[in-house]
Image (spheres, helix red, strand yellow):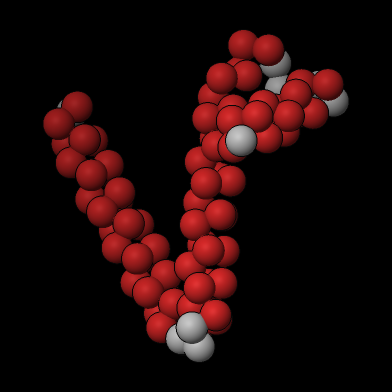
Length: 84
C-alpha cells in the first residue's frame, strides 16, 4: 500500500517535470520512508490520545526523534573520519 502510494506521488512529480525518470527509484524510496514515518507518528499520537496519555506519547516521540537524530549524526561523523 505504501509502495503504491509512493509510486503515485513520484508519478505526479514526473508528470509535472519536477524530477527526471532516472531519479524515480530514489524518490519512491524517499516517499516510502516519509509515509511510513508519518503513519507511525500518527499511530503513536492516536493511541496516546485513545488511552488518555497523549502527553506521554508526545514526550516519547520527542526523545525518540532526538535519539535518532543524535545517532545518525554520530554515525555520519564516524563515516566522515573513516573516509578521510
